[in-house]
Length: 583
Image (cartoon, helix red, strand yellow):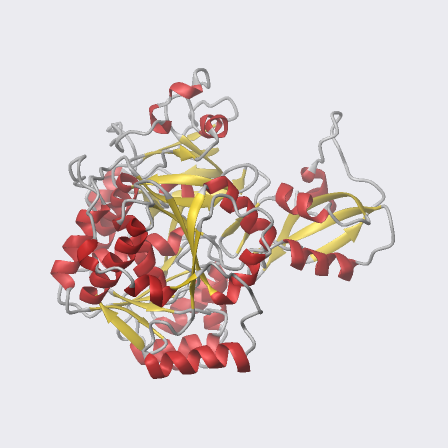
């Protein structure tokens, strides 16, 4: 495959998701049959959308519990009503089909209500990491064109201090306890504000409270928009395979396709039982695409109960919730699996309800997988994906007996090729960049047609930047990354963003960033700094805390006299990695 007329690639144009023609000699096709996985999904007609999926869910599961958080719950019937009320409210503001609406909150009951409300209004959901600094938030608001923002008051000061608020005209401020009932909600809000001091003082005089927004317009005023599979449903920000954070445009068709692909996999091992009381642990933040799809979209499609965990770092609290609700499905990243298996109380839990533990976002370490299997009696089943693919690209069969250390086989109706530096397909067993074609692949990056074109091959395959090896059965193992991306607890961190932020310190002349191994998080960002004034390592680490959200900030600092550079002055991060003994 050669890169000639990139802009002609059909995969980067705003059209209905296409099902690729997959050659009959692809090695994983036999694996589908062997593991009872359907090779194809039944995509709906082009004039349907996620709205049809939501409405099906509400009819089918109305009386079932949709979500639980901090002991409070809402049913699918209530989720239907509340999300229509939010949709009606947004439409009453004069916002139009396709307008961007941001959601900046952790896993609380308001998240699914608002997210569904935005999509039901025909608008585009923009997931925003609530831990962003004002600097990071400014970039995303400006780039996305967000016109309304739902934000938890814990982070309202971050928005207030954002220098560039883009096109935001409406701000809706939520309190943690808004959906917990009058008594519990009041207590939670008082504790958060006055005891735990979780809410910095803020002043947003023209904002609206979440309760006002929820109750100001009747659900009967809701106008169902005309949508189809090509309309953009979600703007998911990511570093992509290169560069600064950018919005991957995921259509209704992309999300529906990936939901069905996951369903095919799960149905090969578990019955599609509308009467089941399965609980899916939703500890990973829903603003992360892995959790959004697996815990949110797929979980709701199956009628599961989502157990929302606002703060998964509180392992004591998390394990108490697991003990109380006994989840059937636990999607997690290596960091969380590792934290759980090394917690004294985890092994005391009753795992009789547990059907599957699903690893994604980052590689699961074999040592963690081994301990997990020992404690729970079940293997961790790994999958692979990225924001640009909604996210699932590949997965291991759910019926595997033990952890494989591989990302599995391509999802149904997904073609994967591995290519060399000249974009030629490599042979089985050889290293190559993983490239993907399928109905779950994004439309493109918002506002960045050139970068979109560079991310696709001429024949329409998305280049992931990950280097893998495919075996004769079609199973893929990731062996390296082509780009300089740092992977921290399943989140992409790009060195140039760290370098740009840290270079704003008055005593920093030059800075280079790489990832260094960390047993818990996968990698930690480390910076190499050429000073132009007096500054200590700790001062730079503290500065990083003000500039970058937690997982991006440098954890290690090394001062050097000069940085290795190419003959055109580009910092050679490969040489920095050599200095660390990583190359």
